[in-house]
Image (cartoon, rainbow, N blue to C red; front, side, top):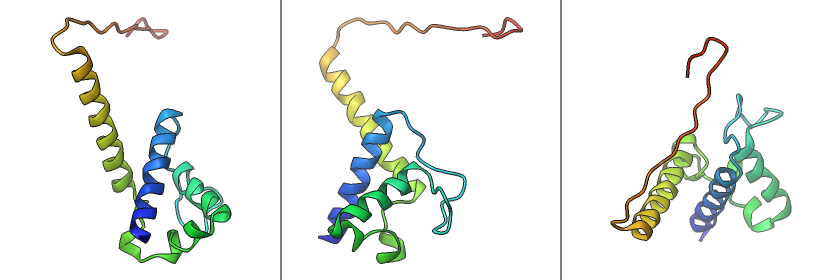
Length: 111
């Protein structure tokens, strides 16, 4: 039950940060850091208001089952990206499409 809560919490934070186009990690993610990055800070915020989460997150769980590492965050993002790609593929099927990319040049006239 605890692992399910941890994983569900991590998935929700990954989804939210991705949708808001926010950075996940900070420069210093140690427990004593003033700002651990958005992902860890969201976990700590939720732990302050939800007694079920506070009992199973960060320093209250075993080291290898936190579901908060950068590797886990990347894996969750990849799963979400694959899901979006699959839904788009199903929706467009064999339809023809194009991708329009707007370009910008810098002061040296390079794209």
